[in-house]
Amino acid sequence: MAALASTGGLYALADRSDAGHVEAVRALEATGGALVVLAPVLTETVRLATRLLGREAGIRLLDAALAGELVFQPLDRRDLLLARDLLEEHQGLSLTGALVVASAKRLGLESVLCLEPDLRRAAKERGLCPIPPEG
Image 1 (cartoon, helix red, strand yellow):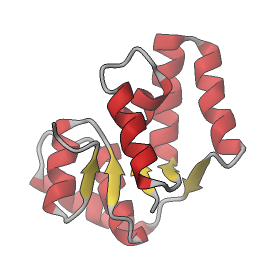
Image 2 (cartoon, helix red, strand yellow; image 1 turned 135 degrees about the vertical axis):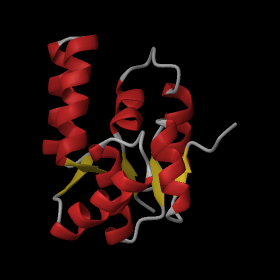
Image 3 (cartoon, helix red, strand yellow; image 1 turned 90 degrees about the vertical axis):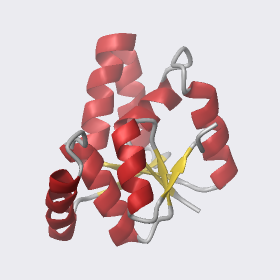
């Protein structure tokens, strides 16, 4: 089954020195499915990887989306509407995080690859399974 990636989850996969890298890799392998990314997640992660790991790391993420290794999913107006509600409910949640939860619900995905505590909480409250599981 596919999982929708957050910025923190996708970055952890890209950065082998990230504290969540090993867990993120294991969690993704356990799903046996594809990794879905939204435009804001890809944009944030490429920017973060470029800043912290160098230009080539950012380009590799973009290339992975272009090659179909990451399933690129566009946003929908329904995602924006639910994201707005989520932002009112969860003060620490970012707009990108809210869009991840909203899009996962619309797409019928059960899992969200995320490491961000506020996003994990919001995902659980909406019936999603944050991966990796809390250890």
